Length: 320
Image 1 (cartoon, one colour):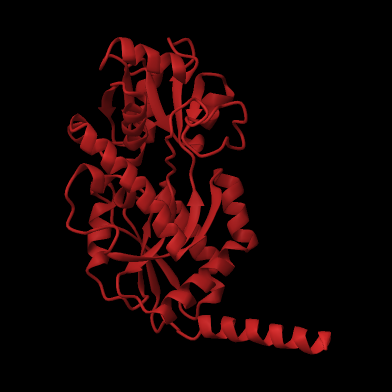
Image 2 (tube, rainbow, N blue to C red):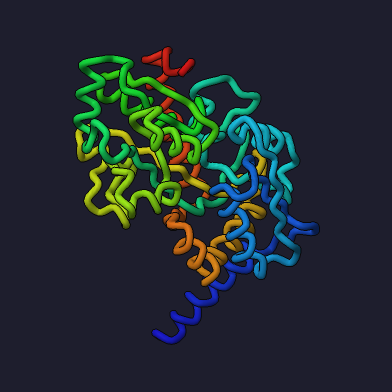
């Protein structure tokens, strides 16, 4: 009886797997990245393309369409046919922060069908060694005493890096001075030259200077402390309910069928269990962020909703 039950269960699982793979792409599947080659989104796209390629009958091709914080690529994908052949590498600024700051020609909640979340990228608030601040509470107290005087850098107005401070301001009831730059590297340069006092950065952007003791991490915007920085508290631990991570995953234009969704999800999920994907995570310091499509969409919506509410309560953040 036990053997027969095992066979039945195994047969059911095999049937589900075959059903998920029923759809076959007839042409190469394009993974569109809204940022230039070499950035976090581009690296994740190329890594999952390499890891999952053997599970597809046609090649996976990465296309870069940089501009407007990823919004140009997102707009282009939103207007394409939901045939499974054109996917957006989403989950970052184009999905979770830009729509809170400005009107866009697509709705990130309805223009796409999320397929799978690939990575979670923690974000840290940092200061320069020898500066005024060695913990985040002191920086918040200083901003409270002198509104708009404590400067912080971001990777651009409306970016996910900017979102960390917008939410912190709203939760802590303070005002910082936002100084936008074109990316993490220019932000770090401004910090090291004493142009600004605080910055938001990803671990890999400051790894060398952190190890050398030149950059001091004050807080992490994840829900829990992160590997590599076990002594750095979360913003939640410090008393402010702020959780923001730079997620990366794959989305298709809205209207994608259940059959195509299941096939794409299954193939990419297999890729995430491969040695090539684990090597990518170890090399870059990104965290495996697997969620299925509905879970990924809910995670994006949660960040966007919180940020929209913060911007609504503080209109000055929209122009910052």
